Image (cartoon, rainbow, N blue to C red; front, side, top):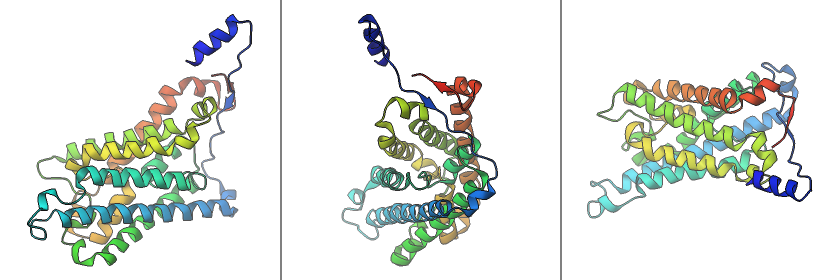
Length: 290
């Protein structure tokens, strides 16, 4: 459509000027000066609180659904009770939409070590910021699940603590592949929604960015809840495993770190070196036209 507008303007003898944009310079690998800025610690606090809220709402939803659909607790209508898998997927996707919207202007709204890792590989954040974010996200997840256990102590252990586990009938390879592909979808969406070229062309894109990211989380949950319970977020898996602390939660826990990190790395490479290859060749400081 943009090309049609440009052609029409040219035919009328007018001049059409697309918006220029410049890719931000790569973040330094180690930025010691960053440690002296309050903005960094404010962002770390935002990541901690956002991940805490994310885990509290989502794991509470999982525990509540399992209780409502338990024939032993609700024999009369257990099969029709609770929010179901669709509701759980909405809880995860909806909370990501809300929290990314709330924190994007402060920390970037990562709320996920895999997202942070992918952005670090693409030189969008420094190593210092990436490490602090991942620590904050992990601690926030542990605290969030801890709140769920504190408020629902009667049901928490009984219904699995919201921990990610490889479902019966699926191999470790299948579980790993599900986590890789699911995280690729999420991180690819993050890169696309925050692409500076797209933001320059369409001023509404930065406002809408949380929406496709939340929808990506929702869709991935629909596909992978039956396989792994859906991790695609190592902090989410870690928080539930630490508080639940049962053997099965730890047995395949490596899948929920290795899979998301591989998926994030592939998404970063695909976006930076395939989709944005022309920009990379011309240099980060060059100006491009739409």
